[in-house]
Image (cartoon, rainbow, N blue to C red; front, side, top):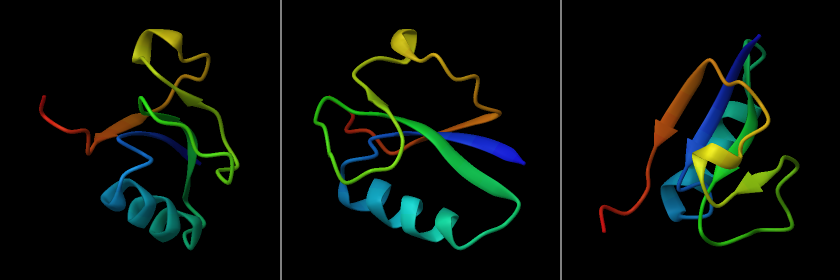
Length: 66
């Protein structure tokens, strides 16, 4: 199974990605990266990629370019 990390996971597009990935059987979200937190998510959310304990196969970046 492909392990995915989403940067910007608490934003609108990040939430859409979580929902779309949840419908698939060949991949799953292993963690998220965002300055905000969301207790409804079923995986850990880190403020920095350096904090991640998981080793995702893919990182999808929908963070704000600030």
